[in-house]
Image 1 (cartoon, rainbow, N blue to C red):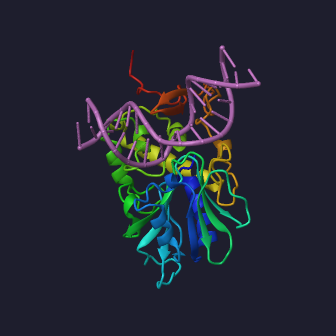
Image 2 (image 1 turned 45 degrees about the horizontal axis):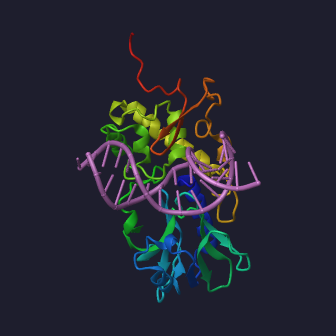
Image 3 (image 1 turned 90 degrees about the vertical axis):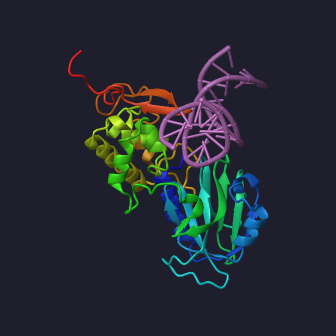
Length: 297
DNA sequence: AGGCTGTCCTGCTAGC
DNA sequence: TGCTAGCAGGACAGCC
């Protein structure tokens, strides 16, 4: 399930394998994967042909490649592009760099063929929650990404603003962590992991957090994301892989997510699982109390 | 108007 | 053995 670390791994792969290459043709094999491209699959293919890929960028879980040309030179690191190929991996999306001779993947949705006849870029997505589109860049960010907050790995992320916004929310802190307009890039796995590290219950209203608790939570989010990125992300199965089809190893380091019934790494209390927002929340019932301790009973 | 729920989608697995 | 129900969840429309 791609969250920020997994998307960043894919971004690095795209940067390495596709920057500077020119598109010969794009083929849409499943219209749903292009549903965010309002003008339709034919327009998508026509506009992508002949364009040169710039350096892949990311904000939160969104990924995009600035497009140059025709008649416009790609210069590494420059931001002169007006348009980008934008992607979101959703639940099961993969961007793979595959030799042209490699057989089609079962869930191949979009194929990009380059003019150099080198490896193709393939968008593969079993559940089609993800998708690609072409989008206009404004201040270097695709228009349809402008509404989400910066992610916590962004040097311009405003810690004080996030802490202040979190501390006026009546909703639970996990819902706030998953709100991409507040902080982007965090999904169900890393939300549970960060809450475990910060020893906070997922339903604690944001407004009940002391400033130090909110800061501790943000620090925990950053730690978890950085540690996961360092080992290539979290892979439970073949649904998340880098552009070369390789898995990450952070699943070995999970303390809460998916650990129902296993002892908490701090206090040995069995990790609990409860339904939450049509998904699951995992937490330690002892380390992560719903209520702050009362002075007396 | 912020908060919250339903919906999309496919494949795997548990259970009968 | 074969069927079904349940589960995985990011993002957004739409409801209250």
